[in-house]
Length: 180
Image (cartoon, rainbow, N blue to C red; front, side):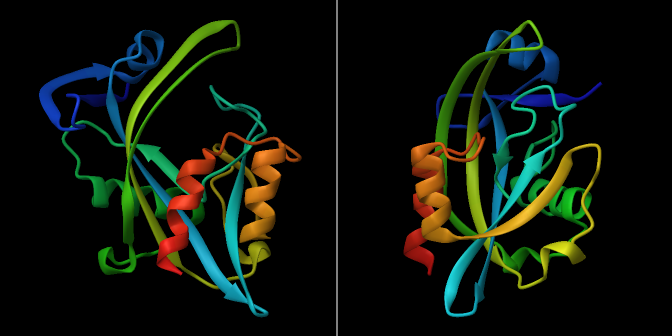
């Protein structure tokens, strides 16, 4: 059972926790850490997209942030981001490699597998640079079907035009631009 910190309207932990399933069923505000992995390759900026596995409880089969996760109760944002990078992509990352791009509050209401889903998340968004071929990235198969590099502007266009199945927030993706 995974517990998350309940947060206030500023995204700060209140001292209370709730089970992840309850958080998503009832729209309880909680924290997430999002890390976008970028590289400069053949004269262009590319972004690493993960394709969520079909067994995920939300947005199965959709392209998503390079690495993202809920922050477990009592854990710090950076520590959680580093843990997710290791678990999902097998990346060993130092805290100073993460560039904080900002924060974003998003509420997503949907239905998955015939159950109501309301994700009320306060996200801290980071980017990091890592030039590694996609085929060399060892993904966490329980979470990720595959990864791919996509030229940044092509990725933005694909999200806006919905030409790839995705659950990417275009405003969040655009937050990265001032850092490259």
